[in-house]
Image (cartoon, rainbow, N blue to C red):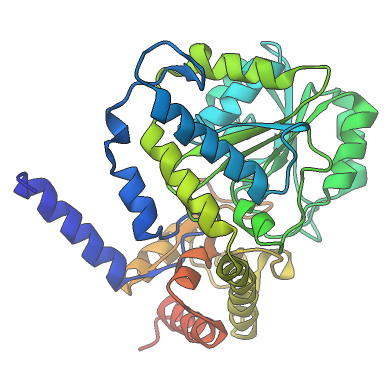
Length: 392
């Protein structure tokens, strides 16, 4: 690289990534093939529009790239093209969710979504997000005692508020979601059911997390978390008389975006092929085994695990309210100095602020990609315990 300043920074980041234990639940490591597609000459091409309907010429090959990505995505999640449409152009998860609301929810309408402190995402209608400024959030939270979803209570809220759309998804909820119950709630109150599976998409693909596709009207996901792809997003839309797929496509382009990043889309196509392999299925199973082992060992060491454990790739650890008196930010800072990367995170009924909450979030996708197994998770848990307790 001729730009030595940027080259130096890239090498420094590569060194940092190799030298730490990465427990960020939303991060992963892509293959060399994915990186090659991401850095390919496809980045040179403008391709506004969709395959066969572009605003620019010269897209014969690009059309094939995008169609291949769409084909592989549907195949990976065992979806029939006659029943499901997928848009692979969203640049990331937040604009993907914004596109769905823009297409399907009237301005000022109601989005029923999980509260941030219970594990919801900013784009599920939180007041600080544009999704909470354009639309009104109808918040729901986990049960105060079990720290799990309380479906009868969710139904009461939905029947009272009559939201336009119910968002079933999370950024920090470690348990399985009962999509059938969410479907029943949506039907009872007349709402659209959207599932944001950004965190657990790879686990669905690997067969270790329930699939939402039997019950959802719309499914959104990022691609760079458990799905282990380039940073991008996708929107799946059930094909029916409501023609949601056409409405959402129109919002993506020309409504919100211009030319799609076809190098990203090619990288997604590569990773979808990787995710169809038997090796990936083993990986997904190991991600969950590792998370459950890590949670179990931390619990044995005296740390309170929110909801009592995990069904997925992520774990919430209470560092403050369990008598330890360590804020999430302090815990994160201490661990980073020791070479363990986590993120501070709110926990249910959190008495502290978002920027210095009562817990930390841990995840196992990245370290599982590196080959870590249960015995490694036990060692990591013990190291976390020593660092947070100030032991040498």
